[in-house]
Image (cartoon, rainbow, N blue to C red; front, top):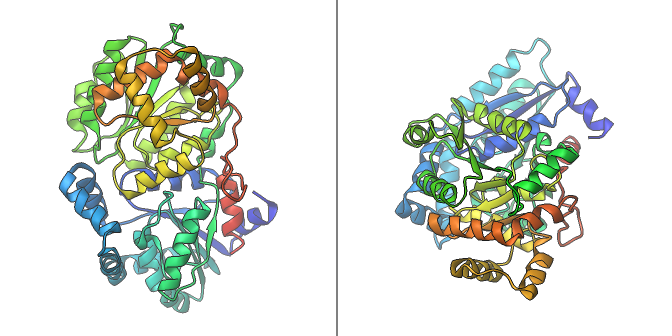
Length: 448
């Protein structure tokens, strides 16, 4: 973060608002990363969406196959534009709460701000604020700058917010798609590429002893416990899969030790009760979304985690972190849900951070047959695996467990850790998409 950015953010004339939505933990994780990257002297307002329909829709489409299919068809099918226009209209129709809340924040200041910088990690509140931005500026004699952060490497019509001063995306490929869509609407929102905002807490370097511990965990000849993290959303997506996977892996080896990070919610109660008295499972449970995010950061701070089983949501971008860093775990991706998670996998494959679809299928088939690697295959896969930071798992839990065990026993997981201690990721224009996206983000938005 440069000095000019610091001056802007600490100015008494500027009010900073970070907004998110309660749809899973992804949007909050990105908000949290941006928050933790601010200087201690900056005190932003954190505003959550009051629209409960977003959370209901997220859970429904996550766990119900038919609802998921309908939603994905509306996202990218022949009626995508019409559906998104209707949704955008509905969001912009109900703006009373947002107008009232922003007005209250301005009026509460002893010295009213001259500029309000709003950073939104969800389209819902962004559309609402865009609809009342001009009105608020006139009423309160204040300049409002609205920045939208697209939290997946995906193109979806609804993320194009008419009235935003800046839309930030993780890749040039997606930037071109949003720009083309904007032109069809006759709009010209500014769109910029920025390295994905990863929490600076996860970017702390492991010491030599802790790095050796991470490597030993994935060494098939070691006796070190294998520490595995499993983030679970409040919507309880994938809990049955996680349960079967943990049982199957523990049956294969008592070395596996699991850390479940979850919200204490109605949908997770049965799952958490099932695991609360297992010596080889640690539960890290929070009452609120923000507490869950903090517990996850604390888990990485206090333990050396080597593997993480997760959906390819915003967690996929941890693949940009070298394995020598606290958050540099090997990512094992469960079945993607929704267009955005398939797009995230495509991002990783495009940058060589996961095996291609063809190589993934080849690895699955080899694991299913249970054979070892001959010298030629060992040389080949180790040559390719030195760039991998994650691998997609088969969709059934038992097959996933067999696959993870095969990767471990073959030495591929150990090689992935050892070979990626200082990796840098380059996009198609040779721009580093590394783990310093938070500092670069604040430099970018304060220049708007």
